[in-house]
Image (spheres, rainbow, N blue to C red):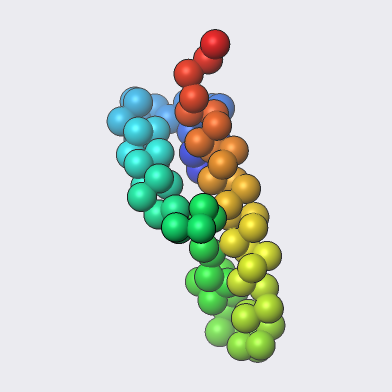
Length: 78
């Protein structure tokens, strides 16, 4: 989401911020093509561990989708 917002609304920090964000996404992509998002890092400690295990895939799907959207916005315009 952040890379999409940076490209859409501008950064104020110059192109280097977008380049670093792109590099981060490309380096953090898993070998199976997705970006893993651990729901433990999103929810408070009050949430049941079983719930967190069930939601990891959902968060990874959403995270992968936003990573792809952000990277697509970095492609040169034709």
